[in-house]
Image (cartoon, rainbow, N blue to C red; front, side, top):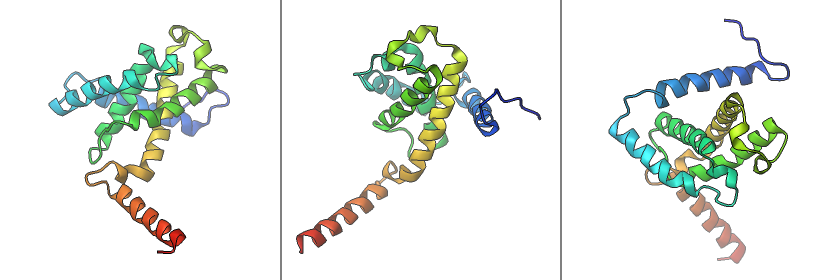
Length: 166
């Protein structure tokens, strides 16, 4: 298969966008969602309106929908940890940075309704891959028993003991 990447967009980025689109179609756009996935969507729809309330563009329905798709897809592809409150906040810097990069302006200065759908799809894809990479390093903070956090607490306790001389 030959892919013609737009000028300035690396082929690997184009491939990641294609993979993202396929995954959205496979997991999010299908009509048959499980009871667990319905519960996940309900939780996302509770958390997302509270996400980064200080930036009004995050409240826009198009941005909320894109973030919902990213978080839903990440959660179904990572069932060991799934979605927990707070992952939505980890997603926000990626969305803001990629929107700004794509538009050349702070998203607060633009009408979200006027942004081309393809731009939003690319922002979603890029945000998903960055979130996935970030969470790959800290996923055990979000699994049962939170072993990653427990390890960090032990390390912090050791540092405090050394500093305090105890």
